[in-house]
Image (cartoon, rainbow, N blue to C red; front, side):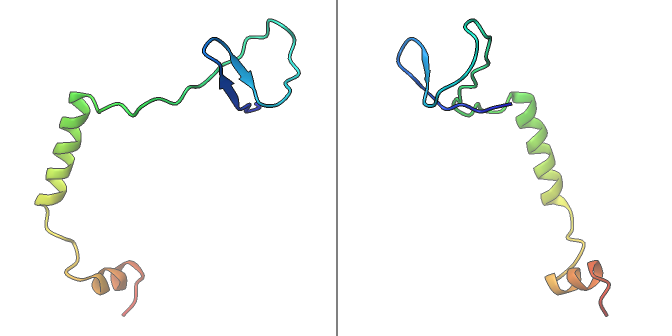
Length: 74
């Protein structure tokens, strides 16, 4: 796959470099858009996960303890 940068002139996309394609070749143009807000179902799921994380007790009382346990240090 080749990525080609193009300018939109209000009617057509004009490649910034020469493109060797036969006339009539179907191409796909990906147009970046604005980020979409999450769906209500996704928002509820993320909120539930965040609440679960916040309500739990930390597994380790300090960062040093976590490093000792995860790296098997004395």
